[in-house]
Length: 247
Image 1 (tube, rainbow, N blue to C red):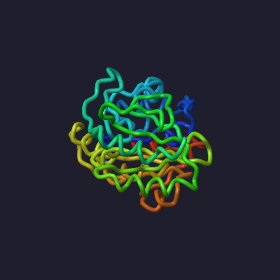
Image 2: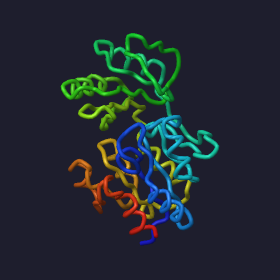
Image 3: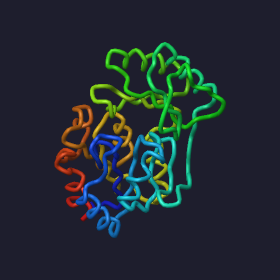
């Protein structure tokens, strides 16, 4: 099988899991070569402002999934090609659930947030980020948020080690939905697409692609569904994947 597209997560897959993480020189080189043979794209929970520098360093040219699957954007022009948002009422309900907590809340493209009690909601939003949730509160918050009609919650490792970030989106705007739309834009078959991820919020990637790759440090829930397990991020596993299956 000749793969025509590779779509990879950013944090924990293309870079170390940190807001300040950046791609290795080896990854930059291999992505440059791969773009001569296939479409290379990212699917990240990050908003465009948080992903911009990484897109630039990798010199990605193909449309990418951003903001947890709520948008598809051109990494060069920054034009939004597709999006599905939460209604203003849904955002208000999400904030209401978070009121008893002092967790930092970010809306859409915000890089710095505030606790729920300080958030003013006056419009639709693509995604609500609930940052650095303590493990004891994760399941409680997810249970409450899942009671809101038309939303879905994905958990991912926080930049604050030991805690969990929650990404809340429209139920029709996950990485799965966005990648299915991206595959349609690319004009390829699902079987010709590789998806690479490392965390729980990458399970929707696996649902949308033909060949599933989990990073070596990924949780078992992801590894169990993978067709191939790559070396970890510390070993630049994404470089291995691109060389093996694209180059």
